[in-house]
Image (cartoon, rainbow, N blue to C red; front, side, top):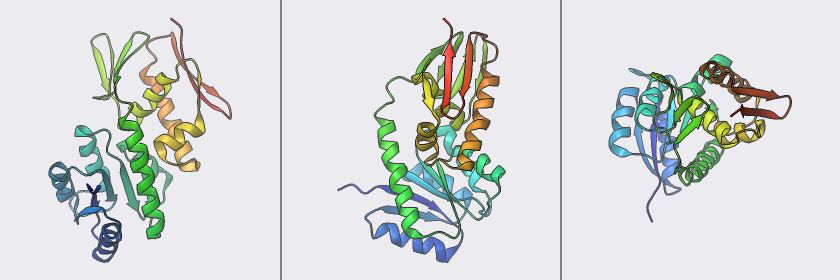
Length: 230
């Protein structure tokens, strides 16, 4: 049986040891590092199935490590461990490309459940990657490289922007339920995730504003609809 691999980046020795041993007793293979620079280096060689990153680490923080990882891998699930609770920090984490976050202190049981949930959604996502290029009005969207192109002009999207745009396109001219998007892309439906999604919807509207036939409509209390008038 092939073990699922976890990259754990946590600079607190006691907590890192507990997390590592807890997952190893559940048949995961864990590579534990204690700074951000080492985390990125190990990511490239270890090729984990999921990353658990502390936000505040020496040499390189979790945000920066995530940004580097997303340049070469847009699919691997990333979970942040953070002692920070500011809404802006949570939104920044999602914008950088994390899939979930857990505030310290936390129970090991909750961390394990969240990791298993992310791994389950990741497997479903891998089965739905056959089409990665989309036409949206006058735009071309390449989800593999997270790039939106209009004529000779291209804009690089963040991981979260690209993921949300792909869901909107797959539900074109239909309502994308708010809860469905939050559960799938953020892992939960709460205030922080909902506010974060609103921020990304606003960003997508700005990216698509040069084609007047494209509109992202807010269906109050239900979700969003990407309308394309052909």
